[in-house]
Length: 274
Image (tube, rainbow, N blue to C red; front, side, top):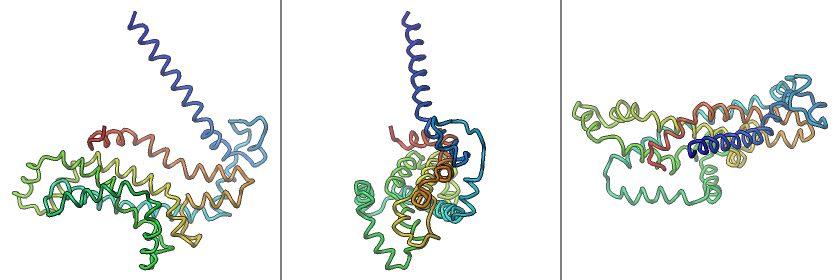
C-alpha cells in the first residue's frame, strides 16, 4: 500500500513540475515566436504562440540596419579574453592548495574576504585605475577586472586539495619542473573543475552588462547586453526586433546550460560544495 502511495506521490510531483515548467516556458516561447513574426502580428489580440506567417526580417534588421554584428563581435572577443583568467585562477588555486609560503593563510583569508564586498563598491576605484592606465573605452578594460575572482579561486583550491601529493612528487622525481607538473599532470586530471569554470566564465562574460556600460563610452565598444538595452530605447515600439535581439542574447546561454548542466553539478560536487 505504501509503495502504491509512493508511486502516486512521485507521479503527482512530476506532473506538478511539468505544469510549472510549461508555465515558466510560455514567455520564453512567446519571445521566440515573436522574433519570427511580422510586426503586425506580434501585437495580435488574442496573442498567438505559433506564427501565422514566418519571417526572418527582424533578425536581418538586427545585423543590417543596426550594429548587432559589432556588438556580437565585441562580446565574442570579451568571452575569448576572459578565458585567459581561467588559467590565472587555476594557478592561484593550485598555489593555495599545494604550496606553503609565508603568509599563505593570511593572504587566502584576504582573498576570501573580498567575496563579501559587492562589486558596486569597487567599481569607482577600479574605473579610476583603468582610466589612469588608459584602458577605459577598450575591450581590455572591459575584461581585465573580471579575469580573477575570489570565488573561482576558492573552487579551484577546493578541487586541487583532492589531488594526491604523491602524484605531484612522482612528477617532480621524474625531473618535471613546477610549470610542467602543473600543465602535464595537474590540468589533465582537472577536467571537471575546468569544465564548470569554463561554463561559468562564458555565461558571466556573455551576460555582463553594468561594467561594459560604465567602461565603454563609444558605441563601437558595446557588448550584446548593452546593445540590447540601447535597442530597447531605439525600437521600443517594434517588438519583433526587440524579441529577435533578446533571442540572440539568450539562446547561446540556454544551449550551453542545457547541454553542460551535468558538468556544473559534477564540478560543484567535486569541489567540496554541498
